[in-house]
Length: 166
Image (cartoon, rainbow, N blue to C red; front, side, top):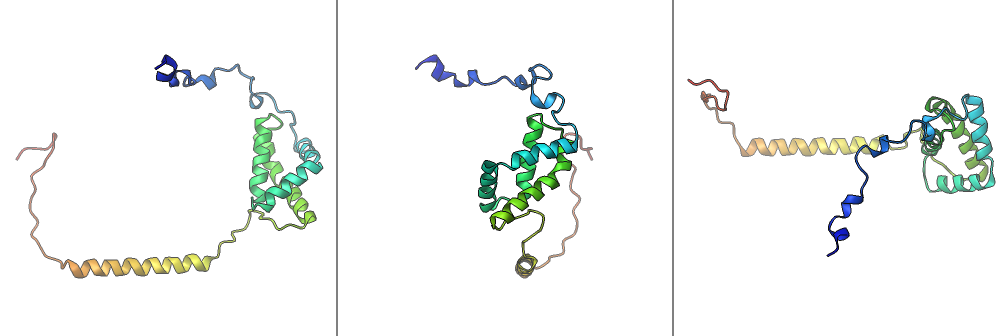
């Protein structure tokens, strides 16, 4: 057996290695390219107005991915690329969502905006009622099987390393 086969983990990154890059070497460690909300909105609108982007966005929304998820992913990618800061990205999310919904409506597709809770509450209420009944039945079964027997409390001797001796 070769030495490389015996110790394959020796080529792994050293813990803390990601912290050894020069300050400013990563895009998010440098000043943002766009510093205002207006500049950032213009950046996203220009990017989203391309035919290629619209086709990809429609495809993703047809798969059922919520608009909120797409918008959050876009703004986080912008932060990681150094395009804008996280606070500007958070302010731009509603506008990105509006543009995505406009693209979906123009394409005539149904989309999930990710803002409303579409889960029916009746189902969960019925499920809770069923669980409550089942738990009550189990408690009743246990109470019937083991009748309560009154016992006198016994004084247990303290145990353990720090217990006082009697």
